[in-house]
Amino acid sequence: MSTTATRLITLILLLQRRPRQKAAKLAEELDVSVRTVHRYVEMLNEMGIPIYSERGPYGGFSLVRGYKMPPLIFTPQEAAAICLGAGLVEEIWGPLYKDAARSAMAKLESLLPDEQRQEVAWARRTLVATGMQRADHTPLAPTLAGLRRAARDHHCIRMRYQSLSHPDPLERVVDPYALLHRWGWWYVIAHCHLRQALRTFRIDRIQELTVLNETFEVPPDFDVLHYLAEDGWPQPTLNVRLRFSPEAAAEALDDRGAWDQVAEQPDGSVVVTFGASSLDWAARVALWRGPAVTVLEPEELRRQVERWARTIAERHQPAEEP
Image (cartoon, rainbow, N blue to C red; front, side, top):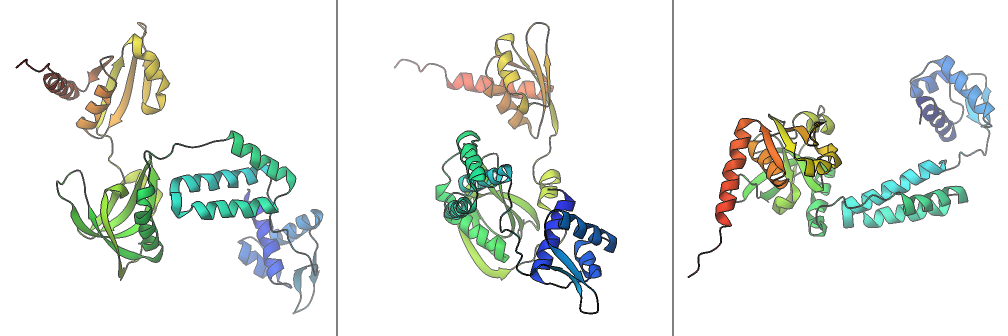
């Protein structure tokens, strides 16, 4: 919706809530000039919204007595977007928001006219998004509920967390700033008291969770999108080039979203380039694609893949006969 349309709706709501408002006050509320307020009033009158003005110290702009803006003004596409959004909320949040999403949709559909209801029904049948979870996250529902409550009410939490870098779980006290669903996994972005820094924790690795009475304040300059873009995830440190043989070229081309660059070669092979945050991760990508893939660079990745391949081959040698 454009800024002008948003302000027109806001103007109607302001006048509906309180009559006889001065143009200067409305201009302040809408963050526009007084002249623009008068122009908006003319636009609304042309649209059939009855607004009149009264002069004098107690006068101002008002809606005609008895006029109420319809509670729902949606185009068919807007109604479908709300429906699809509710479906995504139900799938991602699971039991925590399933009932709320379904109840909201039932209320919406009961108020929508036929055209919007038909569009919603078509969208549900045709525009499907599913499979966003890597696994059944139902067991995480109590943990998600506790984290949601703590983040909303600004309560610290104590948790036992099993990270990949430590063999034993560590107890940590953190301030949960935001919950994040990404690549099929749930994360909590929190200030860690142990590290005295922001950290991202995968929720399925939280073994125990206790919401504490101690509270915290989210820093006013915290922006979750900025954190994710700049600091939230390991940044690529390796520039990797792989060659897919002609027999596997279709596989590389079919997965273009995984690569930064794709170059088809005259012999039918495909060379792809991508950034990796660690040597081990890049080696896993190369080996996962099988023998049809050759590491072109960097050289240390070629050596890593060779070492791993030898180890795998040794472990799969036929057992000696007794």
